[in-house]
Image (spheres, rainbow, N blue to C red):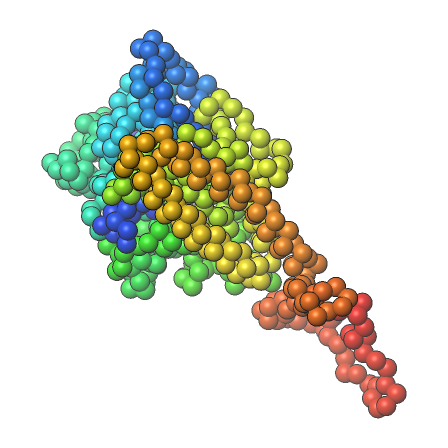
Length: 567
């Protein structure tokens, strides 16, 4: 049966991207939120901008694959499009994604013109609400084909948050099959490269939407038995069955977030699943957190490295002498005929860019969607706020990507690039994590707090202009916020890198000391942690053991360790 062929041939995804979804009723500010890490070593961190436009019915839109830059074809352009900044549009719709891959036989569709990246930006330009976005995606995929592997999309507007899981039909048919679930009020959700929707209510469009042939297609190609009943049909188990890799590398990240908001009982209940040891102990699609989440709570959740959990990896030999919660790729490695894994956390070095989108339903439409955007690693970046209705963006952030048919400047280092300036700080921090990261995190949190205040002040000014009927002045405020904060951040963050470099150069911790006449500084440093010293002593025996000092008395030689050149 084809059932055997298809279910065993799973496409191995690139282990990129993590999303967190928060309903308005689950947030302290009553704002819907989506958090997204776009993880790929080949992804340049820039903020995409698609201005609102009007087109004739004869205009075409060239479509390029976001992952490869390959030209896929031309489709008709929409006659009216919304302004889009990053992954939000100017009328309060935001979309994120993670790739789950799924059945390999369904991953390639000859002649398809719309890939998952283009699907996001085309939809943001054409749709105004989450439900409209789901219908728009369906129309684009069924009309022009779906040119990507399996995807989970996070879709939010001012009042609703949905997760939409999609997979193409491969060479069997044009288009895709999909299921979308609405996250219940007061709940949160997450996904991270593993399809998570299992069963759903076929008769309640307020909680679930789906392709008409999501089950019948599976029957036709042999993915499920011919007598499979709708009530027990599971999208994930059919189109992306959980494997060890799907649990450990992907669902583990969901578990880390859910455990943070649900507490130790949840953490313990699903620890064996997150470790890939019990694949039947699946987590729920969504949970109701013990307490509502603030914007800064979501910022913090995107910095997670499994700290303090069963999957923590900041204290074994791989973390080095400075407890680094990162592992350089590849994700798996072999030793003496066995394969081992590195953990895959939410905070990761290969993130190109990341954001937390906040959709403030209580405000007028131009002020609703705010994209808190950061380049590089979500644990070491500073998120800068940009209104999704902004019509101009700062030079150090704005850019085009492969989905625009443009090769980004990945191989050209520039201090005028937020992406590379942020990389300077993060990569320097990786070298002495336990000593540097507390300093970096304090600076991140201080800046983000200041930006929250700046956004509030901009809201007040823009509201006053809108109340007076002066939309042009309101847009000037909207543009001014991102323009002022963006380029200023890039310059100031490079200055902060300089401070870090001066302080932590050469293995020392050098701090200002105005009373010191030689350098105006105090030179300190703690060496390595005790675990590292123990490993050195255990592995080398007496090689580095200092014998007892034999000299003593009035004329004993001065210890060489007291010489300044030795310190």
